[in-house]
Length: 346
Ligand code: ATP
Ligand code: FE2
Image: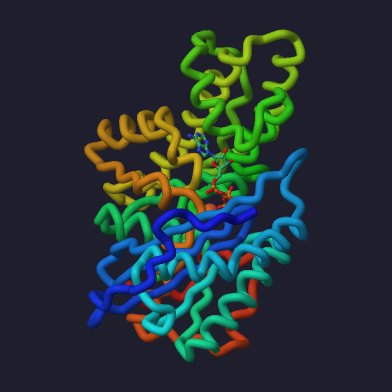
């Protein structure tokens, strides 16, 4: 059930935004609906979230979509309230066009189209993975990073090369966050498991053997999940397991990120996605960057996870670069690849 956060119902919005470009972005590729409003200096005026939490098992795409449909309209109103702007002051509406779960994407696209039509402003469909990178650049002022994008469903190493964002490495099976969440669920811990395992890992000290699967710049995690669950059934302590999963999985991620940096010659590394909030991952990637004489950038936690502000900001960059989309061009794409995006704003 969605409840308006305090402070989102301001009766008299200020007009201080005059002269600025204002974008509203809607994210909803998976379990989170995010509505964000940003201006053209990447000031985050509002960034609201509502997440569907499955009682048991994983997310059901239809159920998640129903949840999104219920909360989107009040969240849009509240985002405007939190930002202190009127909806009619918005210059454009952006939404996440993919990759993601079909029913969720279609729900968000429908809401975005309705809003853009009602306000008579341009509508822009944004690639979710590219948005993680662009909000990181906007917030941290890094220029041309290798992005380690680590979330529930996605694990990718992305960088800009030859006019496009290219995926240099990715998971060959499940996302790192899914692996953490699935292990936690089987071990009887609530969702999302990642942050709980991070705390538990601090109580562990014995490094248990787990498969280390790196192929070039790709990684795989399902073997690690199976092995960790077997160890757990055989009585291994949860703290040691959490510690070992983090050390092994994060070492794999650090290794492939370093390889991509060496390959592309880039001297910045940016973290994004929910798992980027993990302190141990930040420590390991930060250390690798330091050893190479490179720099690591981590956006604030609310902008690492799936959020509406990143969609608004990427939409705004596209808009300022003159990108237009007809209604036809805003059809959602469950498998929208990072390197399919024509990058006209760089
Ligand atoms: P995407 O649609 O991009 O795949 P997602 O829907 O999984 O993403 P995010 O909000 O980016 O959403 O990330 C959620 C994931 O981040 C969950 O798997 C969660 O367990 C994980 N996570 C959040 N905080 C931490 C943490 N401190 N340590 C490890 N994992 C974390
Ligand atoms: Fe994401």
